[in-house]
Length: 255
Ligand SMILES: Nc1ncnc2c1ncn2[C@@H]1O[C@H](COP(=O)(O)OP(=O)(O)OP(=O)(O)O)[C@@H](O)[C@H]1O
Ligand SMILES: [Mg+2]
Image (cartoon, rainbow, N blue to C red):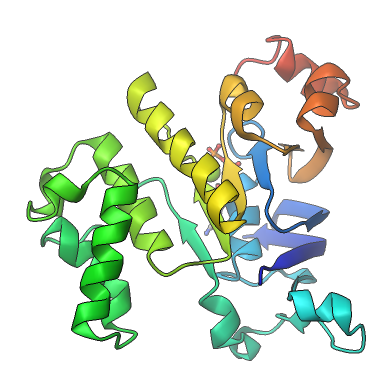
């Protein structure tokens, strides 16, 4: 079971300034999408809207389960209009922000929190948290206060908190920003394993061309609120269609 979703003509303005302009894209299950583009081009806003944390001004984001394809009469879950958001669906979607808010408690409890509020049994919580901490390489730090972790470890803890809930769609906003090559590699390895093991759909913002080349199935390039170019990794890097994407790839657009 896994989810796919579409953004359909998504528009968003803040204080009269248009930040997203008719953004449309279909995201397939089990793929890694890397979203690139200059600062302020709308990437994080697009992520929040796709992750159902914010409503667009117009347009919509629709999620489809496997069953929809089998039964076309089942509509996608429309999410326009705040409270219509389906709680079961919301639980399958997680956004990890670059500066995650950690609780001033142990690494273990930080990961366990999401399971506790979902009233999992104590024994189940222990098994799941230990498994996830092993996965992100933090098992040996589980008793430490989370606030003492390094920035690379903190990012991994953020991902641990998200994946312990077994999301089907994982949004990562610059998960390796300001990390050294070794921590970056650890996170990239985790992302590859999540894709392979769980067929998770992953949408990740990155400014790093090499990272996109290592991880992406598809690359999307945003510029001034629009998705101006996209393609498979090969298409995007070998034959960019948009001039600004071309300048970015060839190092002429430095930001
Ligand atoms: N909640 C908000 N209120 C007002 N303006 C906002 C809000 N969120 C985003 N913006 C504005 O929308 C524009 C796009 O912001 P966004 O964070 O989506 O860009 P970004 O592509 O993620 O940039 P960066 O690479 O710097 O993270 C910016 O001009 C920003 O100031
Ligand atoms: Mg951003």
